[in-house]
Length: 189
Image 1 (tube, one colour):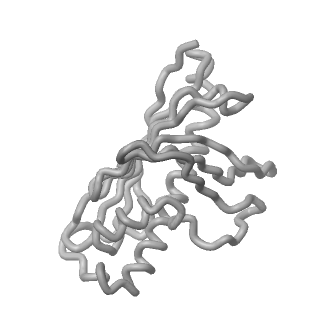
Image 2 (cartoon, rainbow, N blue to C red; image 1 turned 90 degrees about the vertical axis):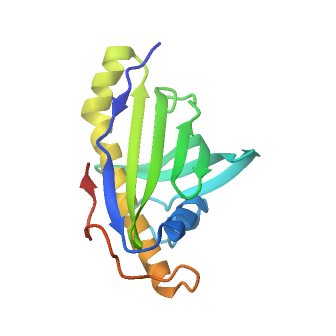
């Protein structure tokens, strides 16, 4: 059955680090996962590269997901296509099962824009749930707020990790931002 795509509001964050470092850290699948501390009862994320096809990699992601008192892990398999140093695209391979079988589309993109000596990172996401209008309503009411919250949390973690690495980097040292707005948290575009 068809699905109606839902575009989430873009989330943008200013990272006090050079674009090349931010791109390298995010594209080095797995490095962005931080330490193995457990957060809110959920396990830490895991990433497994299944196959490579030219510049693309087929990757299995296991992402902690917490909805109220229920904590678990959400597994997706996606094609990941880095376009250095400007963007990284993620395209879901639809799965089977109760939840995975209903998700027909998940297309995410990280865009890296150089802002002087710093980076503006934008996270874009589009998803679709089968069952046409019913899936669209379910997506808008239930899943869109969860995915938006995940986007914000993930961007803040990326910012923290990349900026900490920039403070220690010899190749991409943290330089003074000469352009751009230094924002401590994520903002919607």
